[in-house]
Image (cartoon, rainbow, N blue to C red):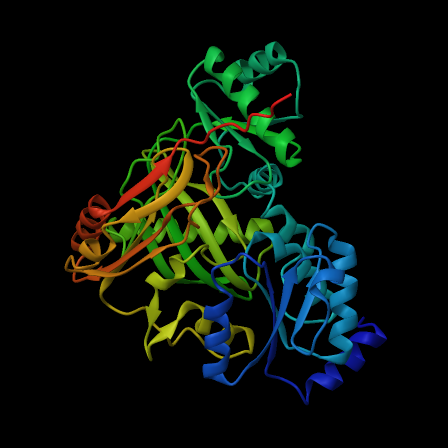
Length: 430
């Protein structure tokens, strides 16, 4: 039964049916892309930033809330919605998924189950829900910070075996994800992950059996639980550890049609197991002799600048397609452009201070290269994975075949040079 605020809210929405709330962060790469898409469609966009309300303030089309205080953030957005109603709320990344689901549920808008939306951000909860729905998952177990290492090794030996993979429960982008091949390595890995989580305020740790095989990324949208595949990306660089830094994405996939169909089916099953019903889906999956395995399924779209690899008919960006779906337009009629495309997330070669870079002009002149964007600020500290969480930038390419695109990306990367000075510890004279 809808509460009185929902009835009143829906009545107001009859007058304002082209306003969308976007949950984002101040350091995202994608706010401009959504803003441009909204302007193209004539949609009014409300930007809700992850920052204290006192700093972010409140304007006609902007609001600051603290994503780390979700219940307060939800209440603030609901109060704002009574003044500036919107027809949908879209989280740009994982940090806003739970808040978006809670707000949508309160306003009786299409939404994912808030509990399941939160599970899409928690690797342990995700594994539990997948297993409960009989979606194949590797053996897994959880540990708290600073548990006795000998007890951990005994449990891993009994329940998981080696090789295994250690993962912080709530970090993204392969941060803190490390493979251990034996008990000695597991000791060192657990110490490293514990140190990382203490430094940033993290909590639990997931340990699961290592899944061999090739890895892919799937981008799609859900409509009442039915998955529409927008793109399937191959990851041609092997992700075997000890760290799992992603570099190249290329679409369309070169995997056999039958394998691609199995991937799509597994991604849809995984989304259903988590209770995801509407909006974006970004999934990572592995394929080996035992079939298709879900690494992660998330209720948000592809991160960073990687969405720029995707264009649809009518010169439509991914952000425009997502806005169209959010206001109820049929997006199943739109197909991705036929040419192959890809992106390289430029890895950090060593830790230190970025002082400069060169070779961008030569790299851009390579046939097939569309654009190179260096996103790492000069004179800032660079941190390697698994402690780090960023890249130097992005290389974009397109062409007739995936192999052509992959080759262009690799050749362009070879042209780039980065000056990274060793970080000198600050010495204080006594």
